[in-house]
Amino acid sequence: MHLRVLGYALKSSWFVWFFSIFVSLPAFAQVMDRDIGSAPSQLVSTPLPVHASRETTVAAFSHPEAIVSNPLSGWLRKRGINFLVDNTNEFAGAITKPTRGTTPGFENYKQGASNAGQYAMQLDVDWEKLAGLRGFATHMITVGRYGTTANRMFGDWLNHASEDYGGGGNVVVHLVYMYGEETLYGGRLAIAAGRMSEISDFAASPLFCNFQNGSFCGRPKGITDTNFDAGYPAATWGFRVRGRPVRSVYVQTGVYPIENGIYQVYQHRTGFKFNGANIIGYAAPIETAWEPVFGHGTLPGHYKFGAQLFSTPQTDNYYDLYDGSYAESGLAHKKRSASWSTWVMLDQQLLHYRAKGSGLTAMTGLIYNDPHTSLRRYLVYGALINRGFLTSRPYDTLGFSLTYTKIASGVSRSEAALIRKGQSLPNHATGVQQDAVVMEFNYAIHVVKGVIFTPLFEYYIHPNAQYNLRDAALLGFKSHIQFM
Image (cartoon, rainbow, N blue to C red):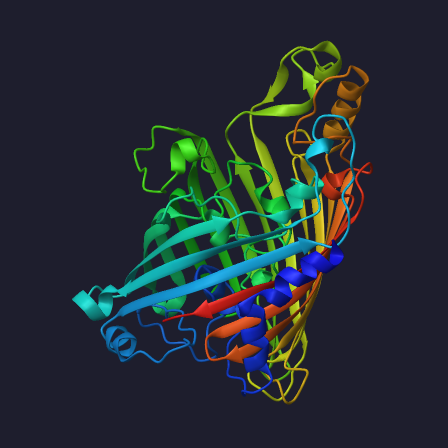
């Protein structure tokens, strides 16, 4: 089976085509953290210039290189219209055999491969250039997603092997977000409102999607432990305000109505359902960060601290109505009137190489959730991103990431009690959930302008946080093509 998985990749015309070009053509400047959807996190990760103006103006739009030079794109940008189209594709195949058994769930586990991806379109409009509205811009993204993810084949439901899976509604066009933003005083104040993905602005970094696995890419999975938190490609109505009291510090907060079922097809299949009839509460995040630049302007860092409150009642993961074990008593779960989440996220470039944007960057962070209502009590992550360490390949990137997830003790104790009673378990579990580790090692090859191809290796320790499941190893690749 190991050879069959490798055969899938070797027989793929993508694989052969990319590598043949890789060895024959020079590199140009593009990185995976400049794809569609990363613009909000890029803005929040960009401190003000040293001699920043106080003039009200629209912040610069994301402008990644494209595979084909398009005069129309340049003509539109001069008039304030930024239109981007890209595709991200992710393949992963297991090279280890899954745990097999006769109990429900185990009999469906298999060794196999999967492919998932998305095509995306982004439209940014600078209404200052187009209509004279100083500092005002609008942003809109739509996606279409396809395929499936390999981790479920060996029993893991916590962390996707391919991040570009799910949430797209299985439709040709799914609206991710659509909102307006006013930028004042040279970027010192920014106010936004509309259909927004909260976790594109809060607990966000454009560096996360240098990786493919869903425990890390997009955002560390612990931050969206609750389905009430809107993360790409889901959105809710929202309002956010961000201020920069000094050039290297920002403070931001907002209010995001909680819409029941934001990741469910019945409510948000296309993303264009705006009636708000399913609003059941609100999420209120707050975040501050220090963004220093060391080494004479060559070593940027980001030190973020944040928290959020969810006003919607949620079920306790252990207690029943009378503060006993719901799993033992069979009574309804206790209701908590609110819940919360906190995070610390740090990244710092340690070394700078000759090429612009190159260097060694270290990342680490902790997400700690309300232990009474969460599945993931906390998640710790670390990563190294080494871009341009080969002089002849200045825009290639070597990456390693690791996430450790600790399941809330109430979940573990409840599952143990349910097993003793011979009852089915929550969270697609086939054993007691305790903790899990996901690692990824990859090498992003800048093939030609607008094309990145990333062979990778993923390793799951305790899939689904269960000790009764074998560890899983996967080989795969991620490709990104920027068309315009």
